[in-house]
Length: 344
Image 1 (cartoon, rainbow, N blue to C red):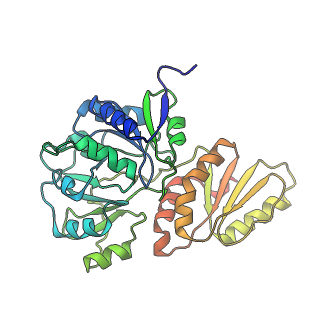
Image 2 (image 1 turned 180 degrees about the vertical axis):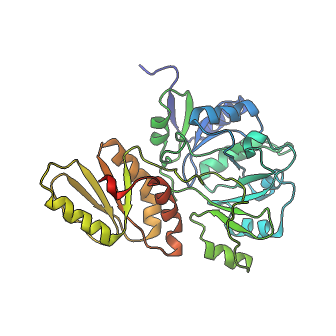
Image 3 (image 1 turned 30 degrees about the vertical axis):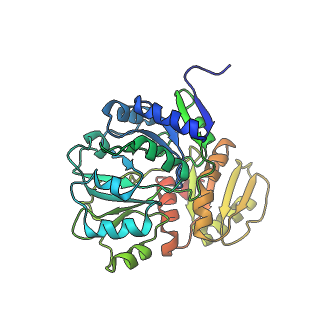
């Protein structure tokens, strides 16, 4: 028998979109598919609803949320000012996996911004997210937006399917719209346009080089005075299983050490991109295609799958240090923060 307080997954039909919008208007949470990852969504203008996000996720109160809206014009209603850089970037990358940080409008809740004078805004491209946001906005007379951080417990691996969301919140009454697997697979690029020079505060599918081409100027540096943004803590996106990242030479040495070990070994899993790790007892090997977009799409789903299989350790080969891999490297550095090869 289904528990009274438990998530339930529904196909993203027109009727269920309308039902999800009704939940949002009633101050309840929904699981919202986007092209990046699934979000835990609430009415961004309802303080009680926003508080439910923080409670469900175990999220620190000063950690800002991103407001999702249906269009760039809708986004402007949440901004005190809209610089030329925002116009250029919105025209180039929205709808899509990009968040803009701008000065907040006066009506934006402190709970959404973490008490800062800036707000993060995004126009997702996923058709289900777009349908929900357009219907939720109604006639547009009042600014309407949906706060939607990733639908997972704070600091854990982000969800890329509706089933992942249900697994994260087994005791939460939650309507989850099933929009299929997220097309991108990692969170949006966050670009701060609230100051003198645009700067990337979180890398994603929209690459720094593409941003500079659109703006026609170099990006600024992300310094200590940058606004706080989602996913920027040192430890984040982390599996429950101990996870290490090792460069290819160090990883090959470690595999030889495993092979030569005399004592019984715990079960481990190795993920590579540049070579096929030789199979051995008590070791599972996985090789992903050596391109950044494949890793972005596969990474979270794979980490979640491996987490459930109870390995002693997950070991990931360090990705290339080239610009297209910035987002994967960022997520893996945070996922493996605090882990050391000495622990093997």
